[in-house]
View 1 (cartoon, one colour):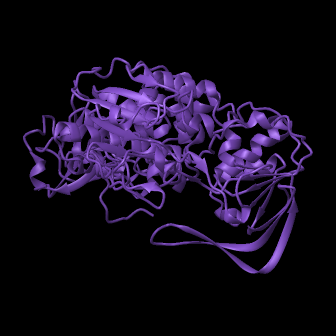
View 2 (view 1 turned 135 degrees about the vertical axis):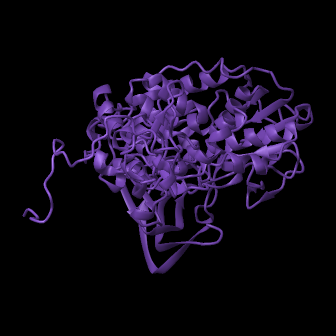
View 3 (view 1 turned 180 degrees about the vertical axis):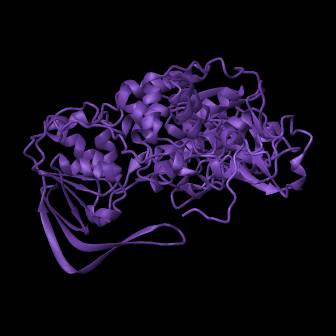
Length: 588
């Protein structure tokens, strides 16, 4: 309905004031009480990542076709993108802002794709041996490899000492090749070693090389891991027909000569238990009828990754939940059956320790020919230097990895915490920074706080190594929420998940379960990313500013505003798709 009292005018009306000259004389910015602040921020996916990878930047580079640049972005914080792109538990995806619109981005999928298809020569990034100080790293699992990588990039001379014949630790001896192909692992290790790291394999610290000799180094980083599997008292001691999950995974082919009709019971609900079951079915060429996994946890609370559990069930493996071992029955020193009792699992809220308690008197027996016990690991205390404090079977450290000996630092499974590859990589990175601060006389407490990513557990070693974030220091502290985004610029689109080999095919071979996304599908998935918190030069603020007061520097490409004409209306802040612009007080 037209308001009859509202005058209708046009530009030709002689009573309408029209300026035919510049309006720059009228500095409307004097009306402003707020001003826009242009600053990159931290995406929640990056804050949730234990390693602190700059995920939005990697996606932005990939969206422009720069897969090499995306790989380099991953490598700034993580030396093992090909590994993590396959086995990481991806906490980043659970915090992805896109998940509030439709489905989270396949972040782990891009990390794998960048590793598989990108090229990045990082050998020339650091000044090899440019700093005084020799560091020895004991153990070549993910924590040890990460510590080596970041210290070598910082310019220190690093020697890596490994007790086994090949480098990789549990990455090589604990994760089956259908999850982590050895060619991928070897490629990542070679890239790390190319930084000038000296390696000594088949060398056990404390035996083949004494701790006295190791004192010639200026600092030590212990990443010895939890080398031995545990046995429950109910299962007596290892003997004929009974081994740990770690021993089985370290050399599964020795069991290929076993009769594949033998009934195998796997005790435990973690990744080692599931990996053991899925490895055994492959050795048996898909015959799963005699393989059973029994654990006390309910299905939804099993420690193993949900996707691994689902794939195991698809392959025909039987998983029985809610039962704990009660009594082993033997004949001539070999197990013939194992009795279980109904059980509950309780977690101490303060310590995080898990307690398994039996409930009721109901029992259930399983006939067995072999038992694989996968209920956890422990450390060989005799593999540590004298003077190291140990509590509850773990090396005692502070939050920075410092031990009771000033020159000795530690990380990985040996110090407790979450037993995942990403967390071990983060430990190694933190240890590298702590050792650097120790040798250079800086306070690690201050450095990690300065370079901390949001309010999460990670810090940016790239910022640390480059001498600090400078004027962009605040960008590591401000976190972009879903409410900060303008989602009118994004449409709902289905997530592109990786295809997997069919269960009947994959259960008969050690081929990788998923071949990954092909380039066309990966491009579609990359385009779904909001790229939260980083300016991608979309120019939307320029288009929407009613006063034409947004300024883009021609050389740097950085956006700012013209204080003479910006009225502080906030239109640019509302229009910004990625939460880059926020309105602050005029005196801020």
